[in-house]
Image (cartoon, rainbow, N blue to C red; front, side, top):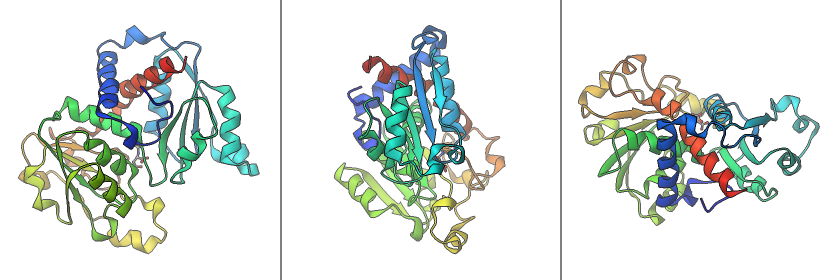
Length: 304
Ligand code: NCD
């Protein structure tokens, strides 16, 4: 990989994506082969926002490469509580680890923090900005299920605040993919993201009704309404509960439609979908380990 810091999916070329996905597939085949590969290495984890999958799968990934993690712990028990700036925190913590993973509620924070450190910094979500490692595991899931040839993807839900959407939509411009964005008017893609997608040559359309495109889709990527990012709870209530799918909804879809979700889900996908062959979201979450192992392996290999 050419990049030390992984901040945005925009920096990932098709070749970068292929190198991570190919490495992940090798690791998936034979995880034992890399069990000691990075013994003695430490990954610093700084989560200023809640996380289950991202934090645990990065931890599992580092440990399965023979390394370990040093974790900042909950924000309210860290020096952030005493008023320490993000710049100071990362400058200190880079002395404790060979690479850093950071999640923070402010868009742009990962980029800013990366300017203060020499060890590689991986953005695990910066507010409504980007979440590039989620995209890598999402792409891995697509490659293993629908494949990348002549792909039609629907991305539905909170396209305004959903950072997984922003990263994914950009990464898909590297492939021959038609993208359909489905959301309420108020949660459409932000203007800046739409502009970037056009600049990158995206083939895309926007919709408010899933039924306009459902039967054309190979992949449906469903997302949670990002309640914590709404400035006004009433605005959230206006859109909450819309854009749900259940097994009946999917009767109109292709038999081999792949339904994905970065998780956690709230009520966007009814539990009756879990029993269908469409459900790929738990496998998707599990793919986080080999994909993050691959990414860490490539980054740590380069930085030594
Ligand atoms: C996502 C996130 O944090 O952006 N979660 C994840 O990392 N799998 C999606 C979400 O919180 O809705």
